[in-house]
Image (tube, rainbow, N blue to C red; front, top):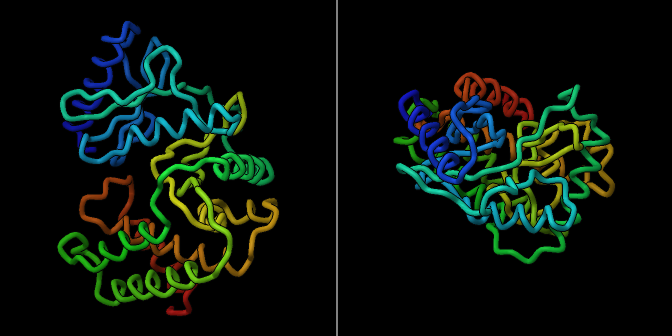
Length: 277
């Protein structure tokens, strides 16, 4: 968020939490991109704040409650308040338990894989409506095709992304493996290492697809500890996911810190992965 929007979002979160009877007069920014993540003090909870037009908060809350209730390694909602989205001044605010970081912030690959395996097992038991992974691929393809939204993307790079998204999206879809509910983006930025173990956050990206699509977001070493992954499908998913996240970074409205530099770096990786370098 830009400075003014972030200030308004912070003020909205503090006002909502104070109105719920919890002491909140200070906010520490933990993450700031298209959504603002705050640690509110002295009540010590975590608030995630997004524009009302850019969120699926109720879906995320309902899913988090069901997964936590079945023992899955997901972040819990703050138990002191009603588990629902709160709206204020054009923002939607969700309130979560704040987890103190563990001594080491790096998740060992085996622990990462074990937590993801547990999450997938819990998700297989849920019957909830969720988009298919191909819907997310289609969103990336539309973004790449829209020159007004990606004005800085060079023609050759646009063609590379469009071709990769089209061909690999089809290849993964037609692979024929089992599909289930997925986290959608279980990359290290959505994994907390806490004094209570590994916790996944940001469930609004959930979709249906093969588990290899989720594994493609994790560090390479994690797959070696995840039983049953198809190496060919995983390789295709890794390149597909790389093309998708590269497309997001070229969006003119993207606010991810250092996004353009990452976009250029990831394009070079994509050329290597596709043999187009």
